[in-house]
Image (cartoon, rainbow, N blue to C red):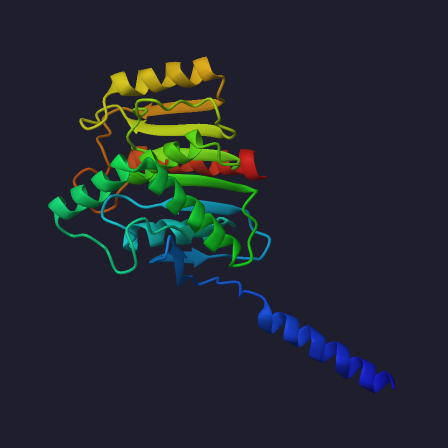
Length: 251
């Protein structure tokens, strides 16, 4: 009888493990659906109870850069779901196509929000919690993360690396729930220091907890490895501040 009981328990445990989403320490592509369209993100998790970081890509789509950053975060102990806001297989190389794809989402902010919320659901389907989470993004992704913050998403924090900072007409930070961290280059020719200051005033007026840092000599896209814009000092300082922010917000 005892042998049968042990066999039954072993069988049940094995079945439960087989049904549970795997922990993907090495990372893998994940296809998911939003509004009937297929998207392909990237998921990596060092453990089932790791806090979640939602990572939003730059205007060239989810690629090697975002996957590298996701792996760095996993090494630091975080689960990461890197979103795809363009569609499975859509990774634009031409500047004109990048402008078209990002421009379409800038014109349809509700769709942008649905895509990010759909990504959170896809992350949850992998077996990680989405309440103890922070969203972060680069350039276009930083702009999208601030859009998510204004939507009232119930995340612990929102982080923009050299993202667009202007608030669309008719929007505000009145519904923002999490703390905001903005990491910006003082020499950014695409996003002015006037926009930086205006955002600081807007969030202060709305009572939103925030921290905003600029790095001297850092141009737009200063964190992107292997480019003319890359600035090692600003990249490393901003990354260290980001990791400290994750510790503060996620524990």
